[in-house]
Image 1 (cartoon, rainbow, N blue to C red):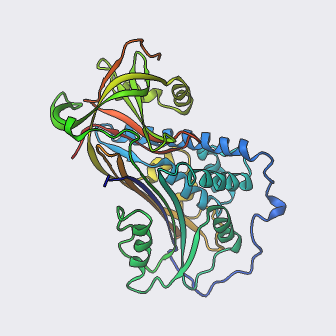
Image 2: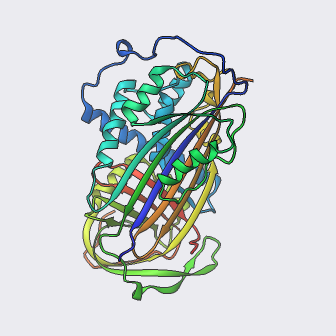
Image 3: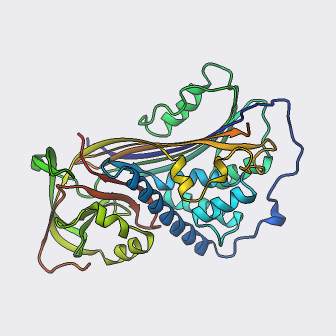
Length: 419
């Protein structure tokens, strides 16, 4: 029986109040009522605008991470991070909301349009390909006795299909319950995101994306051989190099070679960008933006050729606080300045944003997982005519993309393959 490739993403928002006041309740009217939400006039246009904004956000995020860790492997899920930020956005107001709007590229969209676009995108991603499993799950874990504004919860239930669960955070098994949901919705690849709960924790906001599929044409294991991979420091490392010959969507210019390796019925693909031998990722990344990405996507052409690709496994862990601050989301991290008054009447701010991922690429396909946690606390080129040969034996960039909507589910760079 063939192994299936799996990719998973979990995004978790941890909300913490420094001085938990369980006796505080609110009878405030639901925020963002129908009167102050603009109705969606063109859902298709809004949906495409959201996807474009998500692509721009993802590349900006990746660029900052690469600048911080250019000699390290990187693997993130921009879709999962943006998904969770969208759910949290429903609780933001004032300057906090404005900063999030600008950083996420949602300036020309009302909250209703943003939520509706995410709802449509979720439905599209969940019905891509009968040969591929792609499931999106959201949940909110509320501290028992703590009050949140009803519209905030309703928006997340309606537009993000979020499970809303009240939990006694004082019980010793509370973290296990949350981690159990995470594990269940990531195929067991992410087993823990919460190690313990403090008296200040009041809400966990979680997004999980699960992807399972195989290459449209699998690599023959008998053709896999050990070959050197050229590292950034001019050293080499032996890796298992998979090989395949056939027709591929391919792009080549003076700077790089790129190939699309599809899954299932080709609705999703892994795109691999390999800088030419006289170039490198440091030269390639300044050109990696949403505008060039869309241009490159339109330039891929079907071509016969030969591809060698290393099998690899990667675990990645990073805190995203400083990255999101550099993107302009500063107020939400500042006690006394963050405004999440559409979420709760208590003053809160984001304490931590953490992203944790896993990916494995082999002859059958791809297996990956990602977790993002956010803590909030209270205030205290053109193809050639000849057949191509693409030997991926040096650092490269890759992304897993839904070819129907253009959504980038995962992206990363491999500096040193690990097996």
